[in-house]
Amino acid sequence: MDTCTDPRHSRQVPTPHPHSRRFAWASRNFRIQTAATVISGLGNAGAPIATAFAVLGNGGTTAEVGYVTAARLLPTVLLLLVGGALADRMPRHLIMVAANLFSGVSQAVLAALVLTGDIKLWQMLVLSAAGGAGYALYSPASGGMIMQAVPQEHAARAFAVFRMGLNASQIGGAALGGALTAAVGPGWVLALDALCFLIAAALRFFLEPERAPSPSGGGMLRDLREGWREVVARRWLWVIVLQFSVLVACVNAVESVYGPAVADARLGGAGAWGLAMAAYGVGLVATGALMARWRPRRILLIGNWGVFLFGVPALALAAEVPLPLLVVAMFLSGVGVTVFGVNWMVALQQEIPEEMFSRVTAYDELGSYSLAPVGTALAGPAAVALGMSGALWACAVVCLVLSAVVLLDPQVRRLSRRSTTDAPVPVTEPAPTP
Image (cartoon, rainbow, N blue to C red; front, side, top):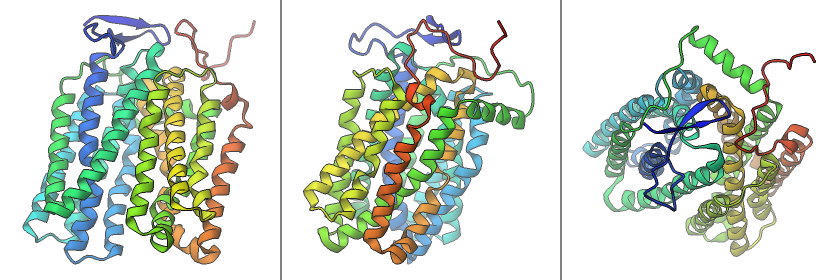
């Protein structure tokens, strides 16, 4: 395999094939991984809709929908760090193939039971938990693989294209899943999700290993401790992960609970909220084209300016603006998510040693989403205690304050994009005394 050397960590990056001048920077692994992510994303986006209606169609209650959702979330949280440690020890593409196959089989079994019309709650709980376990093993390996497949000089463009594909598949998959659930029933949507997993696994089987598995110098706990040291050694990293642990809880409460409730009460119902969410998706995808060309030097400073936009929908809902202004607010929120997301991936790829990619990604994801279930669970009681308007104002203020507080940290403000010839600055070992 033709390779070129990346001077940051002396790692090998596949040389892009020159047959497509427009995407000549994209390596073979990047193309395969992006295509597989789009395909699996189409199925994944529709599966939660289908699962919820499968529960309700089988005589279940809203509370049971929540139980099935929680059953998927719990193993994800518990196993993310295990997935991160495995992905830094073993070939990442093989872990993704195994995880996709496992998820595909579990979804196929769930689809078959739903189609028979005789599925029990405990079966849904077990199979949802299996899906969560598959995601926990897949996600860190996927994050490590996509960062490893991209040369530093093209990182912003590559990550923007990757996120455009991912976001577009999520938007299209949700729309397709909702339409198919109404037209043919949830069982067939779950079967489509299983098929998408199997196709993605087949594609990822052809990914080229970009490095040999790391030698096992100790157990998994040692690997996790090494990953933790990488996180805590970089203040900019753990400060932003802490920020997102609270911010994501607020955003989830707004999007999952408060937004639909306000739309139902005064904006015209589900159609209005669907339009607002569509505008959010357009913001996600459209900004990808900007980020593919824009290379800001202060990557976290610019990224965090995008985070300020996360609270705009809560402000709009709290101020009781008309639907057109809410649509604009949701569009701006999507813009902010992409601006932050691309710059965040650039920062991680630039600053984290390649052999730590998956473990650091796992800690990042675990920390960022750890309070999301709590935020969703407390959204209802907060609305009762503060009133809907008060709860929305609280979410908006928390988002804006956290965005401002993070900028007090000089590492966040000053972390700059390095040229490909810059040497990395060691952070886990003290500099030698002159």
